[in-house]
Length: 485
Image (cartoon, rainbow, N blue to C red; front, side):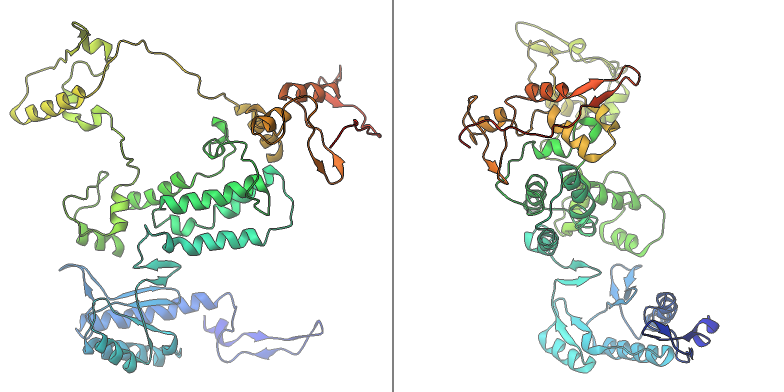
């Protein structure tokens, strides 16, 4: 490390030619690949100084519980001192930063530093900022790109994300791209911009609709995001996987749920991390699959969203999950509803059988079960199957995204043919209706999807040897039908 810092050499390019090398005597230069690693090594000294001050009682951090205390949060260049609002803490913090300057040779820029008080008197804040030579800031503030102290359920918290997406769209104007290219750009750019927010905060419904509106206008309206373009396929079908008949655009709702679920997974691990110890000190035992809020209303919004992750209003869980004890002693665990009762005078009567009689504490569970299934309406109508959607998994074998999107839209019957345009009231129905002039050429769309397929197959011949379709020679002359455009 000493050789890399003190024995380096550099040269300057002048008109494309290198000058004589100069020895480096004052450390690494800016943009050097080793500079971030060297800074991390030096920043460990600040963490050690802070821990020493806390252990000696000079600096008092925020006491979450009797065993958990937080005094310093540091990531790369961003550092947070967290402590009680006392004059002793101000002196200790200034002394720690001064020692760090003397040991590392770095300079702390106090003019860019900010002091934030939570339920602290304004007179103390003014005196503290004058003592530390910094500025006063309030909640919420931005740390590592996330708004700290902001309400994630307010749309104003997500304004930077929406504005960033709109900014990218404004730089893509006056460019032409196919439907397949739009899908690629949505998944790779537009859906990736809010990933950092989505991995920590739950996306509100209003913001999700705003982002989906931007993506939908871009998908069907091109780079300019024209709003009056026709969305030929519903967004729900667009977000389906290709194996289920969609084109694989990310659904923001479930994408957000999957990213937040990683926090639930990390809670189940045994790693002794600071953030996990803080949550355990605040909310009790959290290393379990099922979490509950209880009757307390003092929990943070982030924790409430994490506990209620994946739970939808009106959704009823299976009975074997609601009553696992009763399910274990049931003799009809694999029976259908028809086998568990009978009709008596047009009234459904349940006949539930058990392996043994109930214990005292199981009788209340049984009453809850009877109350729950008593609200279910059983009818004599026979069960029936319904066709929901076709399987177009074979389209995944197409080589390009453009080809897949074209056949996907054709199989769904959502191409801009004359019948669909007339159905939407854009043109009048009938054989004499033509589409408007585009780029000085009269464009005529086929009347139906079948007629378009027939006209396409007329221009194809089958090779007896290769057994595949071959296009005929392109026509060199085009004759447009006469008519009013």
